[in-house]
Length: 274
Image (cartoon, one colour):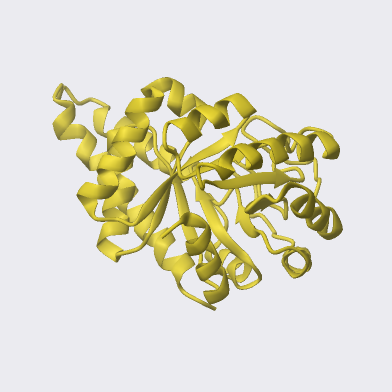
């Protein structure tokens, strides 16, 4: 099934579809083992830094092979693409979906760059995601707020033809200093005026009840990245402290298993309707 159709189906069912970033074969296997155990679909996400680290063709091959080996229904998605050129390279490499992130640009420039990626993606039958509003990225201030406005969202989707829209309703990338409070009424207003799939970035650290409520009000795609990196590296740091083991094949699986348990928990949260 094409990603667009799956997201539309899950939106109607008020179910979330988890999108997890991966950074190497260990993190990939960690998330896929969870999806396979619960027989849940999954979006595998790659950022430019992960693509630069692994290589574009290698990263795509890892994702495709992993989905096949674990028997998981899934798609490969470019997360936070910063340029038309990067989106094009990912489309050529066989990505199912690309995100063009013009959220820090003026509205009209965001529309222009998103519209161009939508145009290019059409011949590939690929799904396109964009972002509108201010969702703090790693290293950016969480104090600044720039919530997505319903009428701007409606206009943006109409002018670009984008399939999915990441909205700013109170989340941020990275770790939260205090519990986030999602603007759920605003989310309902956005969902009421746009047909695009709504996406929640900064899903790491959002309490389960708020995630479920956001899904019930229109969010479908839920991104998870920071917690995956954190639990993998944190586990390795503990294992390697005062440890003379040099065989990474004995050490890495323990960190991978922690990712699996983390993602299982997230899948249980977002697949359950309120």
